[in-house]
Length: 219
Image (cartoon, rainbow, N blue to C red; front, side):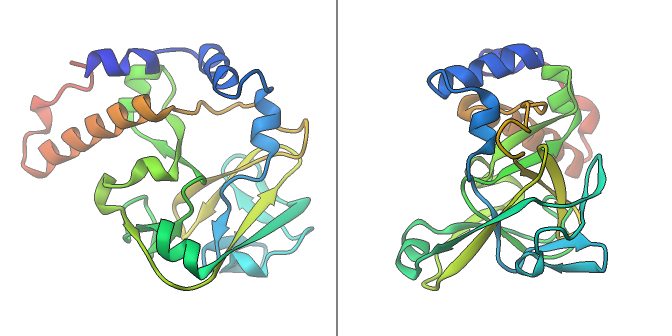
């Protein structure tokens, strides 16, 4: 476990360097500005007029963000996923409460989700980080579902990268327009993510059985 988490025990600059390497020399801001993931149709976001499905959001409408209050997306990138692809590849089903969500939700594999937890802070010095949704399969009851129906995703592009609330509590990453996102949030690779999520799961399992005190954050 410690060997796997060694890479997560780093500062933001080192984390960004790793991302640039994974991107084969492409600047991190360019990676984050590309269409990636997107919120699945039916996902609820908070607008100035209250909570509404993502498909009702238009450029210029304010959307509640984690740090910046209501921000207006400059572009909305809609992508339709065929029934065949959806049935074959599937999406992640998030049960109510798994990510502080008030109702069930679906996640596209490539969507970046922010998770805050003491384990993450213990290993990285930052209390939160970004995980690709595909990495969450099996975590807190999140599972893959295959449905033979067409579905659309909506990518909100802001002036700068933002975190928006979905279904009340899921923290979804949205990119900034070209040059507008500087990779402020740390993002985990597959091995680091698996180790962190496993450790979080162990702690939560221990808490459910009354043994939280027996599970140190860092062992």
